[in-house]
Length: 171
Length: 171
Image 1 (tube, each protein chain N blue to C red):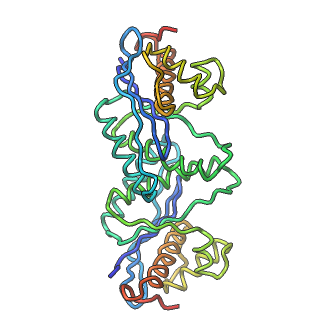
Image 2 (cartoon, helix red, strand yellow):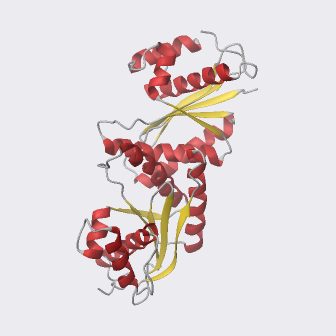
Protein backbone atom coordinates (compact mmCIF):
# COMPACT_ATOMS: atom_id res chain seq x y z
CA UNK A 1 0.00 0.00 0.00
CA UNK A 2 1.47 3.29 -1.12
CA UNK A 3 0.83 5.91 1.53
CA UNK A 4 2.91 8.97 0.59
CA UNK A 5 3.90 10.46 -2.79
CA UNK A 6 6.17 13.49 -3.14
CA UNK A 7 5.95 15.80 -6.14
CA UNK A 8 8.90 17.99 -7.13
CA UNK A 9 8.90 20.91 -9.58
CA UNK A 10 12.59 21.45 -10.38
CA UNK A 11 14.00 24.96 -10.52
CA UNK A 12 17.25 26.65 -9.68
CA UNK A 13 15.93 29.71 -7.86
CA UNK A 14 12.85 27.95 -6.49
CA UNK A 15 12.03 24.23 -6.36
CA UNK A 16 8.46 23.40 -5.37
CA UNK A 17 7.82 20.30 -3.29
CA UNK A 18 4.71 18.58 -1.99
CA UNK A 19 3.99 15.48 0.08
CA UNK A 20 0.56 13.91 -0.44
CA UNK A 21 -1.03 11.27 1.72
CA UNK A 22 -2.71 8.90 -0.76
CA UNK A 23 -4.00 5.98 1.29
CA UNK A 24 -7.25 7.65 2.35
CA UNK A 25 -10.52 8.11 0.47
CA UNK A 26 -9.01 11.16 -1.24
CA UNK A 27 -5.43 12.43 -1.35
CA UNK A 28 -4.56 15.01 1.30
CA UNK A 29 -1.68 17.43 1.72
CA UNK A 30 0.89 16.50 4.36
CA UNK A 31 3.33 19.23 3.44
CA UNK A 32 4.07 21.61 0.59
CA UNK A 33 6.53 24.42 0.11
CA UNK A 34 9.29 25.93 -1.96
CA UNK A 35 13.05 25.48 -1.52
CA UNK A 36 14.55 28.86 -2.33
CA UNK A 37 18.24 29.46 -2.78
CA UNK A 38 19.90 32.87 -2.91
CA UNK A 39 20.74 33.59 -6.52
CA UNK A 40 23.90 35.47 -5.52
CA UNK A 41 25.57 32.22 -4.39
CA UNK A 42 27.86 30.33 -6.77
CA UNK A 43 26.04 27.60 -8.70
CA UNK A 44 27.72 24.71 -6.87
CA UNK A 45 26.62 26.07 -3.49
CA UNK A 46 23.09 26.72 -4.68
CA UNK A 47 22.83 23.11 -5.82
CA UNK A 48 24.25 21.85 -2.54
CA UNK A 49 21.68 23.86 -0.55
CA UNK A 50 18.88 22.54 -2.74
CA UNK A 51 20.13 19.01 -2.13
CA UNK A 52 20.24 19.56 1.62
CA UNK A 53 16.74 21.08 1.80
CA UNK A 54 15.28 18.36 -0.36
CA UNK A 55 16.93 15.58 1.63
CA UNK A 56 15.23 16.92 4.78
CA UNK A 57 11.82 16.81 3.09
CA UNK A 58 12.36 13.29 1.75
CA UNK A 59 13.64 11.95 5.06
CA UNK A 60 10.72 13.45 6.92
CA UNK A 61 8.01 12.01 4.69
CA UNK A 62 9.67 8.83 3.34
CA UNK A 63 7.51 8.79 0.19
CA UNK A 64 7.00 5.55 -1.73
CA UNK A 65 7.52 7.51 -4.95
CA UNK A 66 9.20 10.81 -5.80
CA UNK A 67 7.49 12.23 -8.89
CA UNK A 68 9.55 14.82 -10.78
CA UNK A 69 8.50 16.96 -13.70
CA UNK A 70 10.45 16.34 -16.90
CA UNK A 71 12.28 19.16 -18.63
CA UNK A 72 11.36 19.66 -22.26
CA UNK A 73 14.05 20.10 -24.83
CA UNK A 74 12.50 22.96 -26.75
CA UNK A 75 12.97 25.83 -24.38
CA UNK A 76 13.36 29.25 -25.90
CA UNK A 77 16.49 29.61 -23.76
CA UNK A 78 18.70 26.50 -24.00
CA UNK A 79 21.02 27.94 -21.32
CA UNK A 80 18.16 28.03 -18.84
CA UNK A 81 17.18 24.46 -19.73
CA UNK A 82 20.74 23.27 -19.07
CA UNK A 83 20.78 25.09 -15.71
CA UNK A 84 17.45 23.53 -14.78
CA UNK A 85 19.00 20.20 -15.76
CA UNK A 86 21.65 20.83 -13.08
CA UNK A 87 18.92 21.24 -10.44
CA UNK A 88 16.95 18.24 -11.69
CA UNK A 89 20.06 16.05 -11.63
CA UNK A 90 20.64 16.92 -7.99
CA UNK A 91 16.98 16.17 -7.19
CA UNK A 92 17.09 12.75 -8.88
CA UNK A 93 20.34 11.68 -7.27
CA UNK A 94 19.15 12.85 -3.84
CA UNK A 95 16.04 10.69 -4.20
CA UNK A 96 18.09 7.71 -5.37
CA UNK A 97 20.59 8.14 -2.52
CA UNK A 98 17.68 7.93 -0.10
CA UNK A 99 16.58 4.68 -1.72
CA UNK A 100 13.39 6.15 -3.16
CA UNK A 101 11.67 5.28 -6.42
CA UNK A 102 11.62 8.12 -8.96
CA UNK A 103 9.04 8.65 -11.68
CA UNK A 104 9.11 11.37 -14.34
CA UNK A 105 6.09 13.08 -15.82
CA UNK A 106 5.98 15.47 -18.76
CA UNK A 107 4.45 18.87 -17.98
CA UNK A 108 1.88 18.37 -20.74
CA UNK A 109 0.73 15.09 -19.20
CA UNK A 110 0.33 16.67 -15.75
CA UNK A 111 -1.63 19.60 -17.17
CA UNK A 112 -3.82 17.34 -19.26
CA UNK A 113 -4.59 15.13 -16.29
CA UNK A 114 -5.68 18.08 -14.16
CA UNK A 115 -7.45 20.28 -16.69
CA UNK A 116 -7.93 18.24 -19.85
CA UNK A 117 -5.59 20.69 -21.60
CA UNK A 118 -1.89 19.91 -21.96
CA UNK A 119 -1.10 23.60 -22.41
CA UNK A 120 -3.13 24.99 -19.50
CA UNK A 121 -1.92 28.24 -17.94
CA UNK A 122 -0.48 28.41 -14.42
CA UNK A 123 -3.68 29.90 -13.00
CA UNK A 124 -5.78 27.02 -14.36
CA UNK A 125 -3.43 24.50 -12.75
CA UNK A 126 -3.64 26.31 -9.43
CA UNK A 127 -7.45 26.27 -9.52
CA UNK A 128 -7.58 22.60 -10.54
CA UNK A 129 -5.22 21.66 -7.71
CA UNK A 130 -7.31 23.68 -5.25
CA UNK A 131 -10.49 21.90 -6.36
CA UNK A 132 -8.92 18.43 -6.48
CA UNK A 133 -7.53 18.70 -2.96
CA UNK A 134 -10.43 20.68 -1.51
CA UNK A 135 -8.13 23.50 -0.38
CA UNK A 136 -9.64 26.58 1.26
CA UNK A 137 -7.26 28.90 -0.62
CA UNK A 138 -5.53 28.93 -3.99
CA UNK A 139 -2.16 27.14 -3.67
CA UNK A 140 0.60 29.76 -4.00
CA UNK A 141 3.17 30.32 -5.42
CA UNK A 142 2.79 28.46 -8.76
CA UNK A 143 5.93 26.34 -8.00
CA UNK A 144 4.13 24.91 -4.97
CA UNK A 145 0.92 24.34 -6.96
CA UNK A 146 2.97 22.59 -9.67
CA UNK A 147 4.53 20.27 -7.11
CA UNK A 148 1.05 19.34 -5.83
CA UNK A 149 -0.08 18.84 -9.44
CA UNK A 150 2.82 16.45 -10.15
CA UNK A 151 2.06 14.43 -7.02
CA UNK A 152 -1.66 14.25 -7.95
CA UNK A 153 -0.82 13.10 -11.47
CA UNK A 154 1.50 10.40 -10.08
CA UNK A 155 -1.16 9.28 -7.57
CA UNK A 156 -3.68 8.86 -10.38
CA UNK A 157 -1.11 7.02 -12.49
CA UNK A 158 -0.36 4.58 -9.66
CA UNK A 159 -4.07 4.07 -8.90
CA UNK A 160 -4.81 3.31 -12.54
CA UNK A 161 -1.98 0.81 -12.87
CA UNK A 162 -2.51 -1.03 -9.61
CA UNK A 163 -6.03 -0.38 -8.33
CA UNK A 164 -5.71 -3.12 -5.74
CA UNK A 165 -2.80 -1.35 -4.08
CA UNK A 166 -4.37 2.04 -3.81
CA UNK A 167 -7.87 3.43 -3.73
CA UNK A 168 -8.69 5.40 -6.86
CA UNK A 169 -8.81 9.17 -6.69
CA UNK A 170 -12.23 10.73 -6.70
CA UNK A 171 -12.68 12.64 -9.91
CA UNK B 1 50.04 26.88 -1.53
CA UNK B 2 47.74 24.97 -3.84
CA UNK B 3 48.96 21.41 -4.18
CA UNK B 4 46.23 19.43 -5.95
CA UNK B 5 43.72 20.39 -8.66
CA UNK B 6 41.05 18.04 -9.97
CA UNK B 7 39.65 18.33 -13.49
CA UNK B 8 36.25 16.89 -14.36
CA UNK B 9 34.78 16.35 -17.82
CA UNK B 10 31.04 15.89 -17.20
CA UNK B 11 29.16 13.17 -19.03
CA UNK B 12 26.30 10.84 -18.30
CA UNK B 13 27.73 7.61 -19.70
CA UNK B 14 31.35 8.51 -18.91
CA UNK B 15 32.74 11.28 -16.72
CA UNK B 16 36.49 11.83 -17.00
CA UNK B 17 38.41 12.84 -13.89
CA UNK B 18 42.00 13.77 -13.18
CA UNK B 19 44.00 14.80 -10.12
CA UNK B 20 47.12 16.86 -10.81
CA UNK B 21 49.86 17.64 -8.33
CA UNK B 22 50.75 21.29 -9.03
CA UNK B 23 53.21 22.29 -6.33
CA UNK B 24 56.30 20.90 -8.06
CA UNK B 25 58.38 22.33 -10.87
CA UNK B 26 55.83 20.99 -13.35
CA UNK B 27 52.37 19.52 -12.82
CA UNK B 28 52.26 15.74 -12.50
CA UNK B 29 49.44 13.21 -12.66
CA UNK B 30 48.36 11.74 -9.33
CA UNK B 31 45.35 9.94 -10.72
CA UNK B 32 43.14 9.94 -13.80
CA UNK B 33 40.28 7.81 -14.95
CA UNK B 34 36.72 7.58 -16.14
CA UNK B 35 33.58 7.01 -14.05
CA UNK B 36 31.36 4.81 -16.16
CA UNK B 37 27.75 4.07 -15.36
CA UNK B 38 25.64 1.37 -17.00
CA UNK B 39 23.31 3.08 -19.44
CA UNK B 40 20.58 0.53 -18.74
CA UNK B 41 20.05 1.91 -15.22
CA UNK B 42 17.32 4.49 -14.56
CA UNK B 43 18.62 8.07 -14.72
CA UNK B 44 18.33 8.71 -10.98
CA UNK B 45 20.47 5.67 -10.19
CA UNK B 46 23.05 6.56 -12.81
CA UNK B 47 23.41 9.99 -11.25
CA UNK B 48 23.67 8.54 -7.77
CA UNK B 49 26.46 6.15 -8.88
CA UNK B 50 28.31 9.03 -10.53
CA UNK B 51 28.03 11.03 -7.32
CA UNK B 52 29.35 8.14 -5.25
CA UNK B 53 32.31 7.47 -7.55
CA UNK B 54 33.21 11.13 -7.72
CA UNK B 55 32.98 11.60 -3.96
CA UNK B 56 35.56 8.82 -3.54
CA UNK B 57 37.95 10.57 -5.93
CA UNK B 58 37.52 13.96 -4.23
CA UNK B 59 37.91 12.54 -0.72
CA UNK B 60 41.05 10.69 -1.71
CA UNK B 61 42.82 13.66 -3.28
CA UNK B 62 41.29 16.62 -1.37
CA UNK B 63 41.96 19.07 -4.23
CA UNK B 64 42.16 22.81 -3.51
CA UNK B 65 40.07 23.38 -6.63
CA UNK B 66 37.68 21.25 -8.67
CA UNK B 67 37.73 22.51 -12.26
CA UNK B 68 34.69 21.51 -14.31
CA UNK B 69 34.09 22.02 -18.00
CA UNK B 70 31.15 24.26 -18.84
CA UNK B 71 28.35 23.04 -21.07
CA UNK B 72 27.61 25.17 -24.06
CA UNK B 73 24.07 26.09 -24.90
CA UNK B 74 24.23 25.52 -28.64
CA UNK B 75 24.29 21.78 -28.83
CA UNK B 76 22.76 20.19 -31.90
CA UNK B 77 20.76 18.03 -29.49
CA UNK B 78 19.18 20.11 -26.68
CA UNK B 79 17.96 16.92 -25.00
CA UNK B 80 21.53 15.68 -24.65
CA UNK B 81 22.62 19.06 -23.25
CA UNK B 82 19.89 18.92 -20.61
CA UNK B 83 20.91 15.38 -19.65
CA UNK B 84 24.55 16.46 -19.39
CA UNK B 85 23.30 19.30 -17.19
CA UNK B 86 21.90 16.64 -14.83
CA UNK B 87 25.36 15.04 -14.52
CA UNK B 88 27.12 18.39 -14.14
CA UNK B 89 24.69 19.46 -11.40
CA UNK B 90 25.51 16.33 -9.44
CA UNK B 91 29.25 16.95 -9.92
CA UNK B 92 29.02 20.56 -8.70
CA UNK B 93 26.92 19.76 -5.65
CA UNK B 94 29.19 16.83 -4.72
CA UNK B 95 32.21 19.16 -4.80
CA UNK B 96 30.37 21.79 -2.73
CA UNK B 97 29.22 19.19 -0.21
CA UNK B 98 32.84 18.23 0.28
CA UNK B 99 33.70 21.86 0.95
CA UNK B 100 35.74 22.25 -2.23
CA UNK B 101 36.10 25.33 -4.42
CA UNK B 102 34.66 24.90 -7.91
CA UNK B 103 35.78 26.72 -11.05
CA UNK B 104 34.20 26.46 -14.48
CA UNK B 105 36.04 26.67 -17.77
CA UNK B 106 34.56 26.87 -21.25
CA UNK B 107 35.68 24.12 -23.62
CA UNK B 108 36.97 26.73 -26.09
CA UNK B 109 39.18 28.30 -23.42
CA UNK B 110 40.66 24.94 -22.43
CA UNK B 111 41.36 24.04 -26.05
CA UNK B 112 42.86 27.44 -26.79
CA UNK B 113 45.12 27.22 -23.76
CA UNK B 114 46.48 23.83 -24.79
CA UNK B 115 46.68 24.16 -28.57
CA UNK B 116 46.17 27.82 -29.41
CA UNK B 117 42.95 26.78 -31.18
CA UNK B 118 39.59 26.99 -29.40
CA UNK B 119 38.13 24.45 -31.80
CA UNK B 120 40.89 21.85 -31.68
CA UNK B 121 39.91 18.23 -32.35
CA UNK B 122 40.01 15.56 -29.64
CA UNK B 123 43.24 14.05 -31.01
CA UNK B 124 45.03 17.41 -30.83
CA UNK B 125 43.98 17.83 -27.20
CA UNK B 126 45.23 14.34 -26.37
CA UNK B 127 48.63 15.06 -27.96
CA UNK B 128 48.91 18.45 -26.24
CA UNK B 129 48.11 16.89 -22.85
CA UNK B 130 50.65 14.13 -23.47
CA UNK B 131 53.35 16.67 -24.29
CA UNK B 132 52.45 19.06 -21.46
CA UNK B 133 52.60 16.32 -18.83
CA UNK B 134 55.47 14.38 -20.39
CA UNK B 135 53.39 11.20 -20.60
CA UNK B 136 54.91 8.10 -22.19
CA UNK B 137 51.65 7.23 -23.96
CA UNK B 138 48.72 9.14 -25.41
CA UNK B 139 46.10 9.70 -22.68
CA UNK B 140 43.07 7.53 -23.48
CA UNK B 141 40.08 7.66 -23.72
CA UNK B 142 39.37 11.28 -24.74
CA UNK B 143 37.21 11.82 -21.61
CA UNK B 144 40.28 11.17 -19.47
CA UNK B 145 42.45 13.43 -21.65
CA UNK B 146 39.80 16.15 -21.40
CA UNK B 147 39.80 15.93 -17.61
CA UNK B 148 43.60 16.34 -17.60
CA UNK B 149 43.25 19.28 -20.02
CA UNK B 150 40.72 21.01 -17.73
CA UNK B 151 43.01 20.57 -14.71
CA UNK B 152 46.01 21.92 -16.69
CA UNK B 153 44.01 24.95 -17.83
CA UNK B 154 42.94 25.64 -14.24
CA UNK B 155 46.51 25.24 -12.97
CA UNK B 156 47.71 27.82 -15.49
CA UNK B 157 44.84 30.13 -14.57
CA UNK B 158 45.68 29.93 -10.87
CA UNK B 159 49.41 30.41 -11.52
CA UNK B 160 48.74 33.49 -13.62
CA UNK B 161 46.44 35.07 -11.04
CA UNK B 162 48.50 34.35 -7.94
CA UNK B 163 52.10 33.62 -8.94
CA UNK B 164 53.25 33.85 -5.32
CA UNK B 165 51.01 30.98 -4.28
CA UNK B 166 51.99 28.57 -6.97
CA UNK B 167 54.99 28.05 -9.20
CA UNK B 168 54.16 28.83 -12.80
CA UNK B 169 53.74 26.02 -15.25
CA UNK B 170 56.58 25.50 -17.68
CA UNK B 171 55.43 26.44 -21.14
